[in-house]
Length: 419
Image 1 (tube, one colour):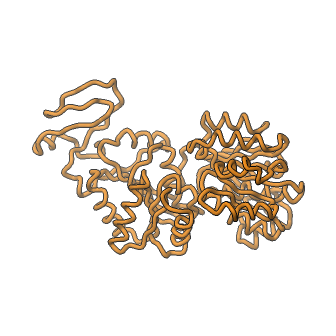
Image 2 (cartoon, rainbow, N blue to C red):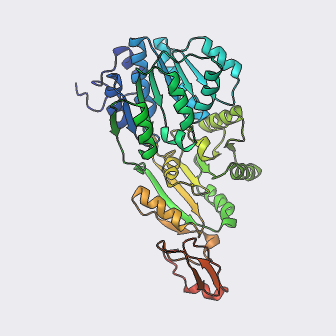
Image 3 (cartoon, rainbow, N blue to C red):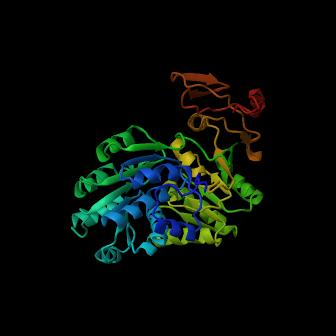
């Protein structure tokens, strides 16, 4: 029998193989195929892979099997509440047949219920760092028997400022343990954490940082800030499938969702101003089709695991270019195709260049109907900041903020892809 590109031959126990088959898992993703054997051997692992590549099973299968064998406990640390729920959902369906219990420890949920779950002596704890620290300091949980530690989406945990909490949590863990760290990037901060938490790790990288899914098509649409909402309406009329919209701020997400609901579009919102129950209801409603449109911020979006999102709209470009990869990775998952449209204003050319440098490709750029009367600014390289005069206005080069003259002078600007 040919075991290439199947779960056979990876060292997975027969019982777990049966469970995988019962749940429809037939073929491992690249990160799973390379991580599972190393994880099963008890080695520390650094896994570098983008969102939507199957990282949960890449660490989940080795954790489940080793917990059954060693009779130890598992701890999974994640950056957001939604991701914690997503990981728990995946591991529960596999661990139930093995008699393994899980507990979710996250902020925004009932502390009493979480303490009750901990008293049930769960085999695996899935937690966000802040809430776990609170419980550890109150001595309501003992993690000294943890044999397998997973840091999931470690790059996002560091971006969110969780490094101090991670170091505190490590203090409560046994020194002799297996640690698996998964991240979309491998920057200096991740390297420091890996050096402090892991011993002689096996490094597995299935796609370079900045790699986007092959099945997702991408485009940038240039638009004036005041015309963004009209462009959004136009775009949503063109695409009828499930759509995920990203806003840079929670206030922006709320405003977008309010406008869409007022126009009768089935939409919901996920951001930090929403309660945990509201966020979970929005995500579940999006999954089952109650809402065609979900509006989210970057932090909340880390727990969105939906395989049939047809369109991602970046209403605002992200603050960090790396978040662009995470955002558009929410479509074209599990071998499906998808499309990503990003709205950019005319003073954001440096942000577009940063994204293109990261993903190592030029993005097709269009101009919205509303903005065709606007000037197309030529692309500029960064230069020493100095005041320049241009068409009767002034600006600081490097900040790329210009004041333009009367309408008839606009014809002097190029109208092609440059802007």
